[in-house]
Image (cartoon, rainbow, N blue to C red; front, side, top):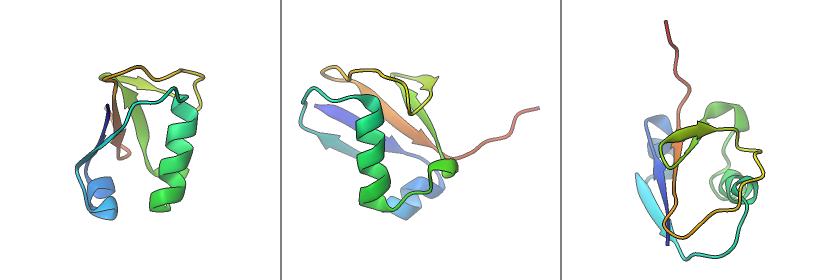
Length: 78
């Protein structure tokens, strides 16, 4: 299983805070694209974390069994 977590406005938009997918060999970029289509997400409206580490959603990373993906709303730092 792969776990996908949604935070902030993304959780409100998707109407869920977490979902799980059956594991299959899939690239991170493919999963994020599928989620953008499924939930009609604006690509500029979130950041992606893989196993608690921020990554570019276009990174050519093959997902592994029990990976955790988080979609995070934009945030500002100071």
